Image (cartoon, rainbow, N blue to C red):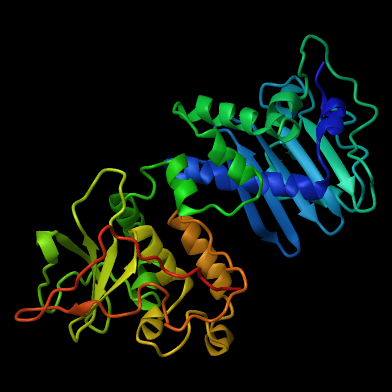
Length: 393
């Protein structure tokens, strides 16, 4: 019989569990076609001093793992369990499930997100906790589990990706749910805690970072479009360049956004399914610079490095100035939220290195003058210029 007592022996320490739950959330967000329907999510600011990892399978089953200074509380709810409050005569939590929860953690069960006011009880069939100072997971010692089920409290299936944390088990779960192959090496990469790079994200869901998908996601949430148009200087409403441009060999260009100084962002080259197109920026003076190898890179730059045009012009190094952070102390939180909404990998600080001589490594030198009667910018063949790692807190 699988119960919380067996689950407790297979769970890792709270620190390891937190890392694993964060990785599951990142992994599924990359795999899913629509992140709002992800089962696994992680909320770093659930409440002051609290973080929450949540799972909802859309069929009435869910769990929460709450990380607090007082300890960690795991609450699971199997809607088909005979131990469900909805299945008992008094519509209360099954005896023994939460009776021994420490006083410091008990209020977490009363949060509205986990409580049904119609029955006046939390939704819980399985509960475990690790109070600060403990050395092992604990669960109710006096639970009389109902007979007739190998998984009476639902802990076996609710927490299966927490007790078997192998890449193989994780891949099998997501392949079964999303009904498509999931590359094992990409799963290993994320579960190991490595940053989600554009290459790994594309391997997990090639369509997610396509140009069309990204442009649709920009236009959907008002906050994203507004922030990019203002701080990121990437405005989808400005797609009429001041002057037309042409590229060598007749390669096509597609204007996708503009900025408030009259510049235009172009996708260069033919659209290839699953293939990125480099992004060219032309300013109002006719200067052109290749700023990114893909739209995903360009958007990450626009979100993570506000007013990056100043860096392109050589006015400051590719990092956020202290003045900007003083004026916008919420920038790291806004940056992370927008990148997550766009389903772009999170911005991570680069390793220590010497300051570059040019403002935007590999893409700062103007490629030429554009417009009627002027030379056309000569793009590298194949496109190989990369932007520098993004600095940020």
